Image 1: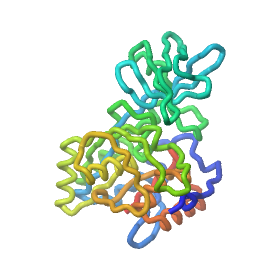
Image 2 (image 1 turned 45 degrees about the vertical axis):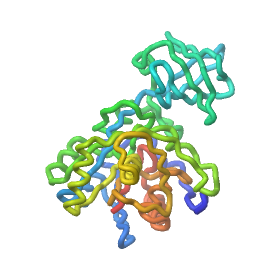
Image 3 (image 1 turned 180 degrees about the horizontal axis):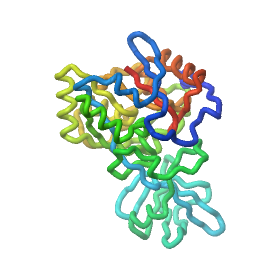
Image 4 (image 1 turned 90 degrees about the horizontal axis):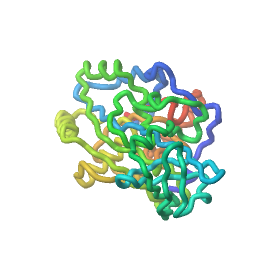
Amino acid sequence: MKLSDFDYELPEELIAQTPIEPRDMSRLMILHRKTKTIEHRIFRQIIDYLRPNDLLVLNNTRVIPARLFAKKNESVIEVFLLRKINESLWECMVKPGKKVKPGDELFFDDFMAICIEKTQQGTRILKFNVTDEKILSKGNTPLPPYIHSKVSLDRYQTVYAKVDGAVAAPTAGLHFTEELINQIKNLGINIAEITLHVGIGTFRPVKTQDITQHKIHAETYHIPPQTVDLIKYTKQMKARVIAVGTTVVRALEQYAIDGNTDGETSLYIYPPFEFKLIDAMVTNFHLPKSTLLMLVSAFAGHDFTMQAYREAIKERYRFYSFGDAMLIL
């Protein structure tokens, strides 16, 4: 398949700039893969589609305040923390990149960093002279570039976020409230967690027309033993493993391939792909030509996915991180 097969035109006013309140009042499009039919609901009505012994798998990663601003001479440099390497080193994106070379010093309010290296991917390795706690105390919410409103870091987290490390939210989970999660548990539906720290690689544009030539950056993940046990139990009960978000899909399908519950995944899912573990998924509406849209197309079918996106645009759904959701069954 070509990159152009995953393109669509989205009116700018459908890019959600603020989250819906309460969280579970966003819209929910239901995609039935077998019958190729579509329903339109509200997110809290997801409970109507869940059955006892189903397993809902959540990503409990927590977004860090990864966006900082530094000065170099008279220039303001945006520093976006991507990945902690060791005690003092971070891999970062810097803007404007041409102003930051190895050996350059960047000054924040009351600490500084030295650029140690420029990587092949164009990122920078920065050596800081203070602790992570100090660095992050100066950080801002790392909202995607298409969001122009100010949103607090708390609202850019899922209600079950626990483990610091993501530079973007696993947005499919933003629709859940604590009350809705309790309702789901009370229906006899199991809930398990994994951790996959969302990195910037997920959002890097695909630049090759031949989609198979694209490479995804690795992201670290952890699947706890109790989650593995619940997955096995769910399969034994002939119930469904339902992934909340593309990050959960990638972690679980990586585990299905190699049996590793800890490590890094650069699993790139595009049509055709044989899913070994997940039976249904919750996801938001993704950018054109993105690896996330390719993953959804691999699961729901390319033509059905693109049909659903056309319908979402016609029905004025809200798109992207703070937008509405779909449940693919």
